[in-house]
Length: 235
Ligand code: SF4
Image (cartoon, rainbow, N blue to C red; front, side):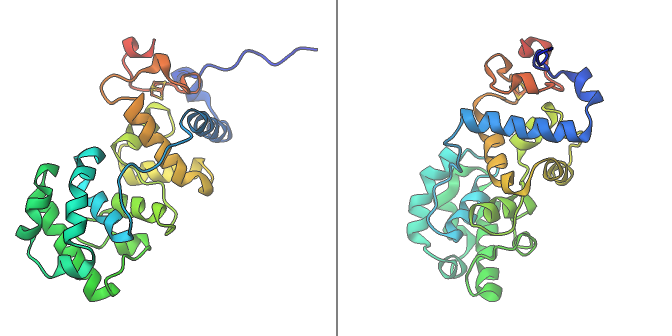
């Protein structure tokens, strides 16, 4: 009796012939591989309350989590709840977040968001993605990240890492984050969306770098067509 053939190495040609069922299987296998390699994958922003998470995610736009974690202890000590942000002007918040980049816009959004939370949500962070995404400075991605970490609406938020990796892995052909998210949601079971998001973010930060992905040491290289990756990086 013939044994199983050699494991399939995915490349652009194989991926083109892939059925939807095969792609689903491959997407699950990629997550399994990433989960085995990074069992500690978790959000790297420090927070203790839903509001702290929301503020930290707003601050993390175009800024590293490490940098955000440096400024938030003093910020959170000065502004412990939505009412305390709502009672000040953006210029009072700016000095705390000056090193985070885009700090004027972020301070403005944090104060405006806090005022809406106080006025419309009793100072609490709603865990409904569509409601959250109506807050100033809180788009669908930020709302999704907050929801999945606080047990709110299910989502597969697409940040720059998730978008890049989903494309390279041949799990989407889209650039638009909303369309990428729909593709990922269609391929992966809902109960794996939260960890799936986290695993892709971690893999993007540790191996599948934007400029020069380290395909040579990538744990899921055999399942990845490496779309758009330069030949020199694929080796
Ligand atoms: S590092 Fe290379 S092989 Fe690994 S996921 Fe990224 S593109 Fe694919």
